[in-house]
Length: 327
Ligand code: MN
Image (cartoon, rainbow, N blue to C red; front, top):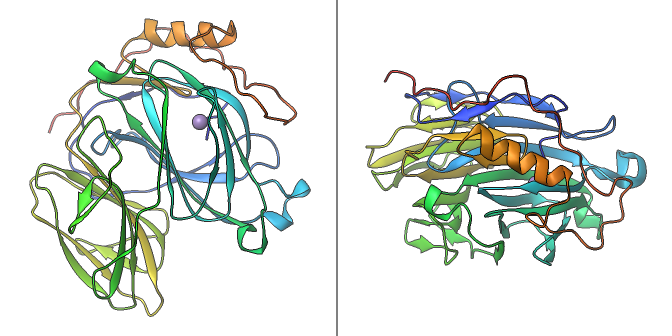
């Protein structure tokens, strides 16, 4: 996934105070026929939940109604200082990156790409069979801490076994919850999981009290900590809580994503597809991408119309991390 806004706003990320529900805004992924995504992170009220710094929710999108059958076609574009998490509910995406990875992203399977000092990748939805005609999922970014942000490019794949919690089913793809644990390395304490709830399911999950949590509603009628969510809303619960209450109030199954982590103390500057710490970091990354610098390598095998996404112009003035709001 790429931020293809031609004039991306400067987003400086820092810890911010309690927010109960973050509502999404619709953003086109680029191109007149591009799918639209619902973005809940970052936004003015809150930049991060733990180290989770970006959250796009998309679909369900019927690819057969799309010209050429393509719902997502993001040409090679760069990243720095972050990891990308691709998680699908349905559909299939073909991933290629400059670490030499060619992977098919499939429902219920974690695909975690570590950009570190620099990577580039392409993402194209494909229809591999009757079960893959509806594209539906999320794209999430994790900020790397300063000590690790220039780490090597990497890629991890993990298909978490579903774990029954009675009237709910849990898939932990990062971190640990309710006795289920992902083996995938994270650079900060982190939780990422899918939770499917039967009609009427009423859960109080025991959580790590050091963690702040987000609950992204994908489908169904769900209350989080007593507050009703709309589809693609992201509920936020601050750190210091021992339990997270999630209730399916509807008579249909519901599905949410759980995101969590210890509050991320560092100030970041996010601009376009880069995470850095200063204006000069971002300006350097941008210039190096435009100059085809070795920092980002190259993608082999992408056959779309554009060989790479050009970076938008930097805004006037210097990019600055936003000051922490008063608690
Ligand atoms: Mn991307």
